[in-house]
Length: 114
Length: 111
Image (cartoon, rainbow over all chains, first blue to last red):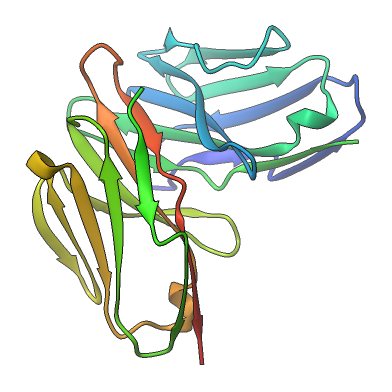
């Protein structure tokens, strides 16, 4: 299995621009998670989906952030408009609710907003 | 919400030394994972361990859920063990399948 795939790996954008991060979970996994990692706040959960349905988005910082999962093999996290304080590493993870709840992480997207 | 504390926050070892990392959590949990974040930022699964002891090569982990802690043992450390070690816990009741991370232990292994 290829594991969780994220793209792009690095993104540099200017303040005010729209940013879209992409994730492909491990095939057969029915949970998908988006996390953000910063020096100040560590690793924090933003939102997670079960069977493509958003279950808990209480970690999404504000309305500028949105996430979708149109099918079982693809999810996006969008920031519009982006701000310098959004600079962070964004991780996607997936797990199987039937086999076990162990989560597997993608390589992350390092976002820099100037 | 649940609090996850890790100790020590920083650790420097000479290659070949052994170490024990600790994870304390403030409430009952359904499961627990240990991760290694390597210097390139990748989060690597080490153990998925709700209770008991597991071993994988030079690494082993023990979780005592009733006393709300877990330990990660690294034996005969190597420079490739450097990075940050995270403990993360699951609580399924009321919070769904949510993982809460500790603040990590930064490990540096020197020659």
